[in-house]
Length: 268
Ligand code: PMM
Image 1 (cartoon, rainbow, N blue to C red):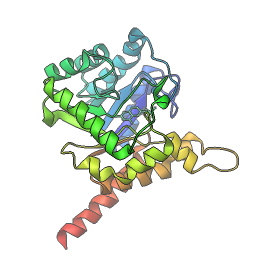
Image 2: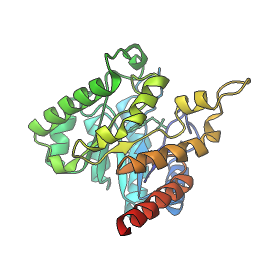
Image 3: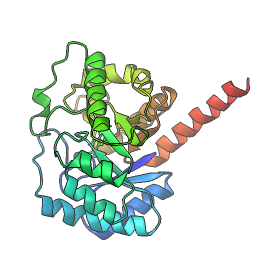
Image 4: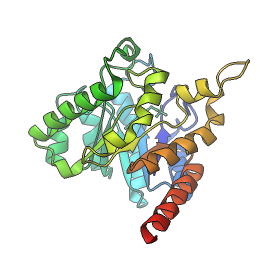
């Protein structure tokens, strides 16, 4: 279970709440107390339409939080598309690089990860957030995302990243409509069978708000937790390695239920 700390003023799910480094680190510790095995620290919002932040600003947001958490023994992943930020976060103690572009946004990222020899999350990605929702055309969303993700995996491995260090992610919400997210979720087992650990990040995303909408509008972001835990259950059943969530407790419980059931089936 990966807990999320967005050190941003504008992330859709928790923007502004952990903008101060001390508050952000405290929140990371709280996520661990709730059951997170690792904490993902990001300083750039990737919500649809978001504009990139300046590199210096991203560093200023991310590095102190990574350092505080890592110094206290928390396993930290850094959520960035930029090699310089990843490098400084690794120097500050991060153990994993989570790049939503899978190494496509910054040509220096894959060589850095190859040199550092750390786990690398390769997500399916087509375009920067400002224009990603203009790139949602697929012939068959499952086949196309599988093919594009596999191509990126090959590129990353050819560039020197150890295949044993690669985690794959279908990139829910990134150049995907709500319906496409559901289609991908219905076929998560295909992604889990690619031979790499699978990360699923649905927590609080807009397609859950739309599913749970009432006459007033979409379900507010912080009232999507039960639906998020349901997705964590189905992700675990489909063989996912990790779910990325904002509130670990309900999802940690869901994952424990699945683990207990699996034990029952194995013992039968
Ligand atoms: N989604 C967001 C941010 N980082 N990382 C991975 N690997 N996969 C995702 O789907 C993903 C991500 C956007 O959500 P947030 O604003 O809640 O962090």
